Image 1 (tube, rainbow, N blue to C red):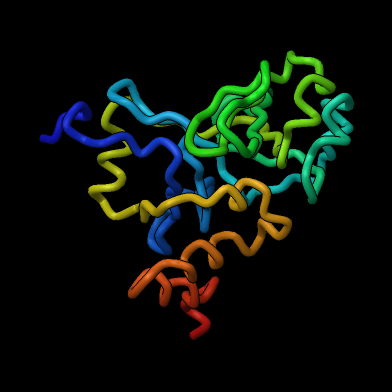
Image 2: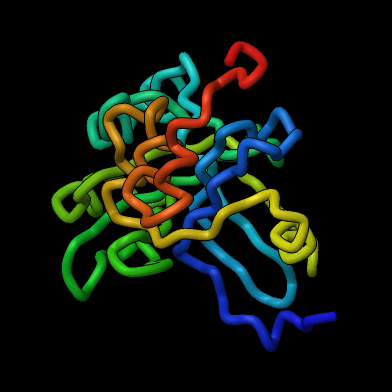
Length: 189
């Protein structure tokens, strides 16, 4: 068995659900990993917009949210908790923002929005998150449930999140690019 300390961190990478992944919570999901270490993994599903606007639950942040300006279902865990993920270009981020990977970071939603607003490149608000205990994600990866690919800052703020699964796969090389054409319902083929 491979110990996590021997595996490089996947923080900042994308988990793209394989067509064979049977869990309805993650059907065609694209998950940005915000934390991955020997204590487990945490991420947010980037392509599950809800009909709830950011203004409905976090009015002060509404003007800073990217399009679509709705709350996204970040995963099946703690749906009553909100996470803010923002892209902030440059080397230094403002107070209230913690870099996760590259230009992508977490926003402390208790911070006054006016302190972060001028620096924000894009902001997404997520209700809940996806979480895995120690070794759980590695087991799912071993079972072939996920493709692991590099993220791009634009993935967080995709204006058409419903197409993100195909977009991310299409930009890969070889077989993964072909999987982007996999039909929604293969039985109709």
